[in-house]
Image 1 (cartoon, rainbow, N blue to C red):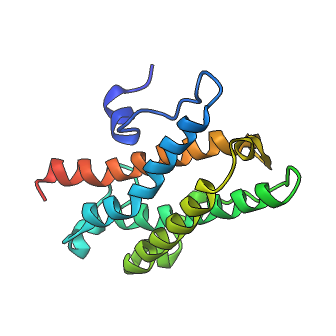
Image 2 (cartoon, helix red, strand yellow):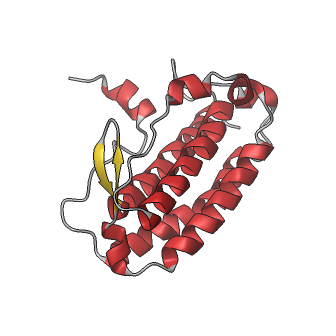
Length: 180
């Protein structure tokens, strides 16, 4: 049985759960609302943090808040590209990337977060605008992930809405716990 305290710190909103039923177009649009809200919420969550605070891990053995911000930029750029491939190609194979290795690169480990916040702003603005123009059947389009197999855009949208809330909670809960 997993350590509940460690699991709660690692997954503050719980683990992603695939929808138990087919997602309606209204369900997908609700997930897009979450994606649309992330840039402003992330900026608010990190506003006023010092470098020392940004370099604090959100849990023992976890990434620093700085790494979380850079990870969101990296990960959500990948999502946007994967969505574009799925919308324009027939079930394309996409590349995976080593999130841990990327988080340890010098720019993610020690660089100013503003460029990554700007990336999140831009990627989310374009991605949400694109997806809001898609008909319901577009969310059944797929890509193939080398580790996770076939992924439908509707589920991917729900996954990245969860991912947004998940990492946002890492920041906000650490701020709350530290009284920042």
